[in-house]
Image (cartoon, rainbow, N blue to C red; front, side):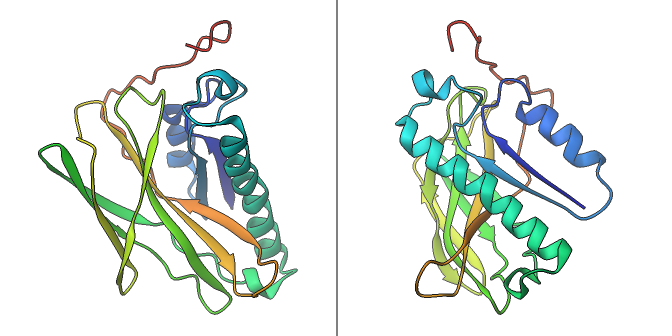
Length: 194
């Protein structure tokens, strides 16, 4: 069983390598992607404050470990159930995109805290996000104000929390990214971060 936590803009393990690895795993697998995170260039060219990106990455990395190890070693019943991988569709409507995601509610000990669509139109150099709204029955959606184009990369990220009112534990699970055929990501130069 394998959990892959990664940055959406990682220069050493870009999304193409991420998915090549993910697709070879034949056992239980999940992924958690951290928007705009990489091995350090995010400090200069991440498109958001470093603190914002670091907090997101910290939750995804630590949360992935928390979920995966507690579940597979049976050490905390709150993680006895691993939510299914979210799925989504994205339909272009002019300069907007209609996003509809199907999200697992998390079972008896977890609840969905936030669902976002993450998108890039510059070869996965920078990602933006839009929060999806609950439609009922595990469906989340939004008419998001970004166009889809030939090099658009998309994924949905679902942040879960345990149901305690005080100090709940958090983690996220991401969908399988939608990557165009033959896609070549924009890898940051480690000298210039461009």
